[in-house]
Amino acid sequence: MNHAHRRRLLIAACLAAPFAAFAQQPGKLRRIGVLSLSVSASEQAQYGRLIFASWLRNAGFEEGQNLAVEWRYAEGDAKRLPALADELVKLNVEVLVASFNDAIAAAQRATRTIPIVMLNSLSPVEQGFVASLARPGANITGTAWSSPETGAKILSVLKEAAPRAKRVALIGNPGMKGAHDFGVVTEKAAALLGIEAQFFAATKPEEVAQALVRVAAAKPQALYVALDTALASETRVITDFALKHKLPAIGNSAQFAEAGGLISYGPDIMEIGVHTLEYVARILNGAKPADLPVVLPSKYELVINARTAKAIGLKIPQTLLIQANRVIE
Image (cartoon, rainbow, N blue to C red; front, top):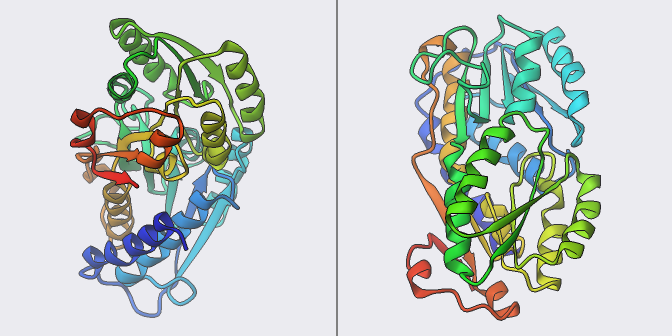
């Protein structure tokens, strides 16, 4: 069992405690739905199911006893989301958890009455999911992944780690709702940092390999990967590519550095998960989404993979190392 997997198991066990105070109605079977663009066999999806079950168990909801969880994965194909959302609505789930914007949009179109809890929404007000962060209105609330400015911060971290890198390849999913806002801010940040940024699109897992062929032909000096649920299953493919080409590579999730990427910078997934499932438990116990403000991440995690830095012959500045929440040795 590797360090990252042990850490995830520990997180799942420890973070369940805050939910112990929630009561449940004995004997009543509650039904919730989870809608995701993820690939069901991916490590990310399996980890998500693990912590989901652990947290809700400690909130008094035990799957198979007083709770039924209906999981629906689009396997990286956003076109499947509307039909999957409709399935969950027809099952009369009491709460629908939707992960990232494409799934949230599909859930919103499918129902205006069933409570929807957003997981990792991007620009939820601008996307029309909620009226405001403080007062969501209607049937949707939840957590936001980050703001568009996070993309600018990620580029600045990459620049500090690899100051000689002038040409950076950006891999991401332009079809993801909210991606445009991030793209605009990131392009502006690149110009201010003196970086020439070239975007390479991959809208689903099977397009990643083709995108990497184009990246190799472009001969960039660094790589920035905007992982979403459609691309997360290909994280190892991307980090192996970066190692092979000795490219300093940064991603927006700790999963990226754990898989061999040089650096990751993004919201603390533990904090986001706690708030998301707290809202699920509160709604099951009678709270209304309109009364629950959208939660923005307050903690960001910088992870540096020192083994990867050594493998690509890069010395990480001490000024950056001391900022890291974790250094993978």
